[in-house]
Length: 196
Image 1 (cartoon, one colour):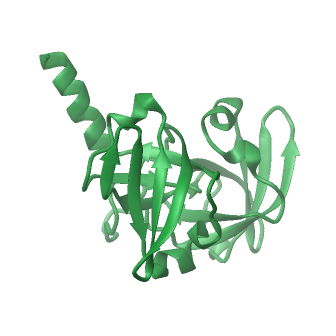
Image 2 (image 1 turned 120 degrees about the vertical axis):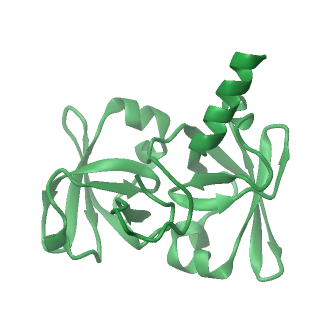
Image 3 (image 1 turned 60 degrees about the vertical axis):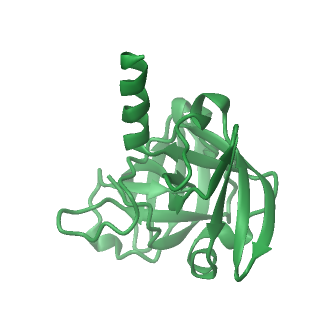
């Protein structure tokens, strides 16, 4: 489990196709405090550490994960959002995030709004029904609050601090981002279906 509060920006050092895709990710985390088998959210995708170095860790990515996420578009040198798994007693600053990406949302508009940037996303129709105003979504591993919803489009504001400490400062219209809907919204919708 994660919170959607990004704690490091890693960089893709290498990508190697074997049976699965293997990625080496550079990090400022103290890797001596990371165990083989630990979960790290990489741009919102929960991945398992399979090898460690002094300032890097390796993960393996299955075909299923490549199909559902934007990892297939990763390139060497790219920066990604990182978050270590939640420990009991940690501050829950965002919302409960599983790291199981539901699909991809596309940035369709970006415009300044005060010091923040207002982003508009297009969500897949099958996921849009789970997105509600003032609800939470995780986008590329970042916990964000939904401002408004219009059919399959929804908007969020991203403040300057978030743009500085995550990859959002380098995003652009047309980017596909990992979308994880709020688990609570999924259960509420399922309950409503069963009662309807």
